Structures are given as C-alpha cells and as structure tokens.
Length: 163
Image: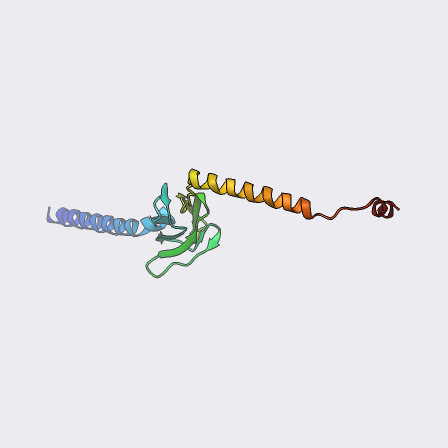
C-alpha cells in the first residue's frame, strides 16, 4: 500500500506542476495570441472641438508599426503615442493603424467635428440705411459733375475716328 500511495502522490504532484507550467505559459502568451491593440485616450470619438489643433494620444501594445492618417508616428518605451493634428473645418476622421511582427493589423477611427470661431456681422439697419442714402446722394452728385465736365467731341473729330 505505501508503494501505491507514493506513486499516486508522485503522479498527482507531477500533474499539478504540469498544470501550473502550462497555465503560466498560456498566461504569458495571451498577449501574443491577442495581437496588436490601440487604446486612444484623446480625443474622444464623436466629440466636437473649438480648437483647430488637437492632441491625439493613447497606448499601442504589441506593435511594430503605427500610422496616424497614413503618416508613421513614434511610440515611447511605455508604448504611448502623442501627436498633434490640425483639424479641417467641419467633420474629420482620424485613423490610427498598427501592425505587429506577424502581420496582424488593427485600426481605430475617431470621428471629430471642428466648430471654429464663427464671426458674426451685425448690421445696424438705421445707420446702414443712412449710409446708403449718403452714398447714393454722393454718387448721383458725382455723376452729374462728371457729365458736366466730360469733354464733347465735334463732328470733325468723329470723322477722323471713323477713318
């Protein structure tokens, strides 16, 4: 009986150690199995901005190569990226794409609306009407003066011009 118990305890110990080693290996390889990932911290998808220049930052894990709108960007030793981007007026799509060393790809799209400073012109109807009347009055007086001072041509001048 003691021999059976020894073999049984040795087998159980071996099985437990093997399960621990397999679990440890599987736990450490889960990152490689999962592939590349991009976590964007800012700007928030669907946000609107009144600033033309925005900071795009986040974390990219298990990547070899990352681009922002088709332009290669760098990450630091903590796998963080920080890039400034100039927005167009209105609707913008920011695209981040990454690849790992096995060729697996991941992409993240952020939609953001730039609402720039709108300049509004307020027209004072009373002052613009009086200014308009002044301009019309001034231009009619000027045109009358121009008509009076315009040189006239004689019939002899017209014959010279026709030839």
